[in-house]
Amino acid sequence: MAERVRIAFIGCGANSRGHIRSVMSIPEAEVVAICDVNPAAMNDITDKIPGAASLPCFSDYRVMIDTIKPDGVVISIPHALHEETVAHALAAGVHVEVEKPMVVNAEQARRLIELRDRYRRVLLVGYQRHYLGPYRWVRDVLSSGLYGPIHFIECWLAQDWKGAGWRSVRALSGGGELADSGSHLVDAVFWMSGLVPEEVFALIDCRGREVDVLSAITFRCEGGALGTMAIVGEHPIRMDEGMHFWCRDACITVEGSVWGARQPRVTVQRKGEDPQAVLPEDMKAFPGSKDQNFVRAIQGGEEVQAPAECGLVAALFTDAVYASVDAGQPVRVQASTR
Ligand SMILES: NC(=O)c1ccc[n+]([C@@H]2O[C@H](COP(=O)([O-])OP(=O)(O)OC[C@H]3O[C@@H](n4cnc5c(N)ncnc54)[C@H](O)[C@@H]3O)[C@@H](O)[C@H]2O)c1
Image (cartoon, rainbow, N blue to C red; front, side, top):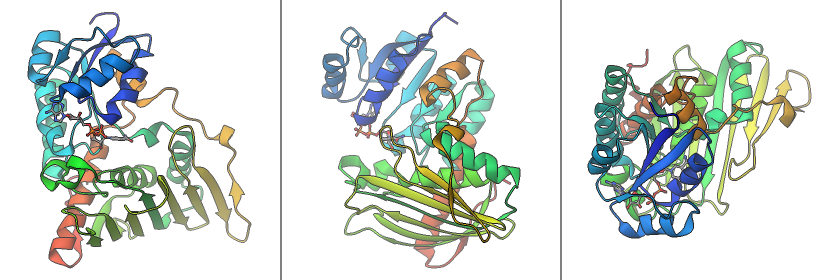
């Protein structure tokens, strides 16, 4: 492999711009090409991002991969196109960072995990909470068992979700706010708690669209822990979220937005005590962004912090939510993570 890891981008919309800048700032990486079916999206990047003006532009990612032979690709395109694009890249021997949700159903997730293993490539899902101090701190405390087993998880994510363009077209998005930003919450609660969802009962309101905007979800995990999850796609504030992990001996709360430089607050309330805030300096972030983790994982120096298995858990849970809505009754989550 060349000294610098050569990264190409598939999808040049809103999300990719920050990632292109981020990869450009990583000394051991370089951006080598961009691809989008919409030339205007690529022009926006070559015109506005310093250092991007001379990047080769492609309208077909297959041609880009054949021509440029990048070490890795970062994929930021509509959700229902993720699977075929990731599969093509892996089979071509290219490492992949794919945005959330990794795929739109669990069958696709299993297929990509199989391809990742067959071709021995890196496959990282764009779940940035895995890199942030508050989430990592809570995950460590929960897995230590310090406060006993988790009995109940209460969590919510609220956003002024526009659902614009492809996001409200089920065939392209695979679902609404639950599959979109909600995927972060679904991933985070099971990644942090280590719990495996077993049964789900859900109600959704599409608010006149083709896809869910509001979701009220109850769930039970292996071992008996219960949970409720609220996904609120109509919210006056840009984005906010919260989680309570009710353990035997304490309640751990994570609250606040992760937009921009903001970090959520974490408090621990032990039995009979007032809530104690955890100091930001005590909650160590992963050293580097998801893009840096991707580059270093390609170099072989770092474990992927947001692996495809997390994408599978999110897909299994989301599949069960939509199946429960269709059935009008509780449904079991498929058991492939067990
Ligand atoms: N991790 C996060 O916090 C976060 C935030 C925003 C978006 N995202 C994710 O990023 C992805 C893209 O979202 P976005 O907001 O950038 O959407 P967007 O609509 O702004 O951009 C998507 C781009 O993909 C292009 N595209 C569509 N089909 C293509 C194809 N076959 N080949 C190449 N390009 C193609 C479109 O022309 C468009 O420019 C989604 O998976 C979304 O969920 C993640």
